[in-house]
Amino acid sequence: MPAVHLTAYPVSSTRGWTIEPAQPRRDWMDQTTEKFAYRCLPLTMANQAGWVVGSPLTFAATWNGKNETGSVSVRFLDEEGENKGQISGHFGHGVVTFTLPWLFRTTPGYGLWVRGPSNLPKDSIVALDGIVETDWAPYTFTMNWRLTRRNTEVFFKKGEPMCMLVPFPLAMLESVTPTFSTLDANPVLKADYAAFTERRNANIASLRAGGPSSWSMDYMRGHLPDGTEVTEHRRGFKLEGFGNAPAPTPNPE
Image (tube, rainbow, N blue to C red):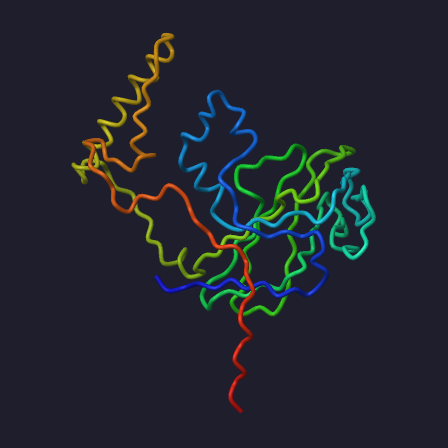
């Protein structure tokens, strides 16, 4: 697969901001019984599928339920200093806006899916997704969250993940051909699915009867129902951190 580049160019103060590979762990997953949430590989894969940006300041935001630009108030626990204007409620409608201090550029044909950190719910506020054509646009973008309860103060701590950057090929979605079919048309898949559901149903029945559980963990291990190992199976991502890029080569005259 060809290398894909993601470059961040500072355009304003980066004081207090962080940007690093997303991590697989979540506090709420740690608190589940025997940390069973980590047995769900799709969850842990999604947790680390991108780079997360941390808030540069600790602050609280409140929405009065109205739509005008002054309907959202932002209260900083420390002085904004160099970060003045980077966190605001200037759109109204319950929207809190983070103005990221970087201009991002990606390899031609790739954009950024800009979203909230995966599987990290936050009470009374929801992250808004955006897709940006960072392969050509000389423009910055913002990360926005929408408050969902009026007159309820919502806190963000300094360093708290508030944005996740996920590069993806822009033409990929329109190249997908979705179709319906039947399992009868794929006998091997039908047999594998039947073996999976039989074991899963037996395990659930045992749990409901107060007996022991015996999760097969075939998907986690990358095994088919007959024990065959899937060679291309992934259990996580190993993303690089941001480093300093070499100076670009000037265009010839």
